[in-house]
Each structure stands twice: as structure tokens, then as C-alpha cells.
Image (cartoon, rainbow, N blue to C red; front, side, top):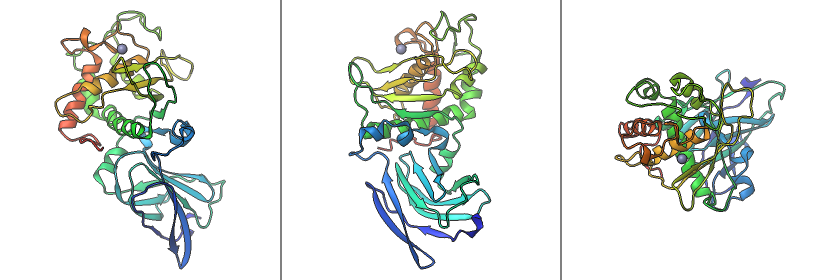
Length: 328
Ligand SMILES: [Zn+2]
């Protein structure tokens, strides 16, 4: 069925707003739509919707069939990806895309429509180096944006959402990379202790099993991002352990706020230490643990936030992260 597809060339300019476009297949005109995922005018109901603007970190540039006649190609990164090819599961070339714009989504009609009973996997291919980096991410965190507002919490705007997307690409890539697992997580310079009962209740042994900690981090289900407007640099809110599918203590939802977006400075790991610290909180750890220890309580930089921060800074300076330079 897939082999019936005609090769389609889709020339895509930099997307801005939502607009219909047209092309030609075998002299027959067709139309596709392109949409900016985080336009300044984006409605709150879409920005804060898990369905509309949530994404998995291991599928930040993704093609998916939404019905028998439509494919969506979404790019939740700040990267402009040139020369993208969409393949079907049997490697038939379906579309050649001249350029996939940052934070954009293409809605492309399938002609003829697929049999809706046939599951169809799509593969995107590009020689672009950033595209390849993003596809190295294996950590399947779900990321979406919070409408929570008030007190220390500010309002997440489309501009802030874009920054969160980029930093989560870097963070998820770091946790997916063997450097973090092999050289940092098991480095005894870093002391991983759970000194008291944490909110998730797993404190029988104060010495943390590093393999289990890694599994817990790598399989953490979701990051719900807010933004901090005053008072503190970050907040991480642990909610509950409500999914029996996870072993041990493992919170499922979080609000995570960041104020200082210094994720691209070559000599400061501060922002990533905050992100790691709040990640410790949303995994259920308190300041009594070295997983979410405060900077002021960790002058020797031996806790988990410093471990993550040091690894991040090294990979940033070695230009191994998907976004080693500020993309904004
Ligand atoms: Zn804290």
C-alpha cells in the first residue's frame, strides 16, 4: 500500500504563523499546512495542553499519522533541519522536505489515504548533525507546560516554552549519553546519600543505589514546566507516587521553574545545577539528601546537582550537546 505513494517534494520556507501551502504531485495540486508551535499569539489553551504542545524528549522531531489521510511532522527544537526525508516503515520515500523550520509543525495529506487498520511507522532521516544529535536521545521524558500562576510562579509564555524545549533537549541528551552514566554517576567523588526519610518514603538505606537512581531518572515520566518570577531560582514540586507500574518511590508529576537560563555559558554550571536540584525534588528527594542538596550546603560540590552540572559543562565545552550555543 505504501509503495503506491508518489514521491512528493515539499519545499518549506521558514514557518511563521499558520498558513496553507501548496505543491504539485504528478501535475495535481495539493495543499499542506504549516504552523509555528510557539507563536507569540498562541492561545493559552493550546500552549498548556499536553495533547497540543506536550512532547517526548526522545521524539522531539517526529512524524506521526493522526488519521488515515494525514501525517504531522513536528519539530520541538530550535534547530532548522535541512533536507529531511520521510520514509515509511518499509523505507519507501514518502516526502522530501527542503527544510524543517524551528518549532514548527507540518500537516501533510496522504494521497491516497492509508488503510486505517494498518499501523504505520514513519521514519525521518537527515544528514544534519543537530538532527542526528537529537535522535541520539533515548530518555523518554514527557514535557509539557503549566498554566499555574501566582505567588512565586510566573506565567509561561511561548518564548519561555521554547527555551524549556532547548534545555530539555540538552538535559535529556546528557542523561542518554554514556559519559554521564559511566564517568560521573559512578564517580565516588560524588556522594549520593539519602539521609532522611524523603517524601517518596524510600530511605531505609541511606546509601543510594546508583543503578537504581539512574533508572529512576531515566524513566522519570514527566516534567511539567512552570517559570519562577520571584523569590527563588527554582522550584520542584513533588506530588505523589500514584502509578504502580513504577518500582519504589517515583513521583509522576512536577512543576519545575527556572529563572536563570544560563545554560550556554562555558564557565558556569549554575542553571543545570538548579535543574538537577529541582529534578531531585520531583523525584521525591529533600534537601536532607545529596540528590537535592542546596548549593550552600554543598560547598565542596559533591552532590548530585554538581555531578550533573559538571558533566553538562564538560559536554557543553566539548560541543557534544545538541545545543552547545544559545539558540536564542
Ligand atoms: Zn530545593
